[in-house]
Picture (cartoon, rainbow, N blue to C red):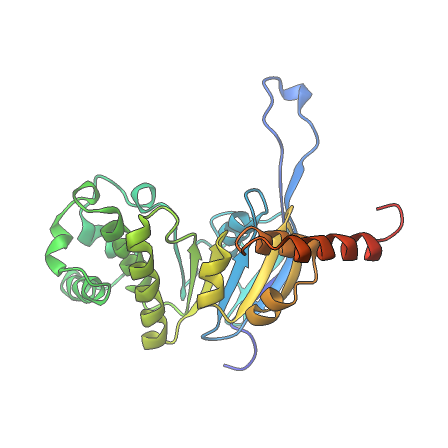
Length: 272
């Protein structure tokens, strides 16, 4: 296909804060404010921001688990706004323990996105488990019988079994032990190369995004405040919030910090 694989056009989501009395409900709060970007086939895009920045809400709207109040999701040339997990699109969630049904066997969980007859489905499930480094025999186990890293591999197998073109990755390693995180990231990117997948990686960890993505979107307060190639955004950030994220992971340099503060004070609009 020519053109973007995915177009996010002005996605907006509002929530009304809960109240013990219906007539005391306050005005709705905007948690995602007119977010827009595109994704090319086979591209890896990072979305970073702190807690409450709107990045996970963006992912849930993008994959159809939340319906936006405004805007569109166009995937492979088709408007899929509000369509739950449209064909060709899957998601891997942050916490594999919460995202896997504890009462179902692993084989049934991995086979959820499939429609083929039982015999063919069993073969595809075994193949998917093997691709993520698991013995197909684990298909007979329950999620609580596996380690955290194994459960996340199961979640990845479930996402890949139907051969999607795009996978949303919502903090895919943040719930795992540090010793396992690098293994799971290496697995994800080897699978991307093997199958030509496009990834959208949502993370608060700039170090992970810097190593694994080609383009980067920075979110604050529900808005996209900066976007560009990952190398450009990290080397020459234009927005103060992006610089704040960088300062949190870079070694502290008092002279550089003072110079950035003076530059910000000099360049900011009057009255700001």
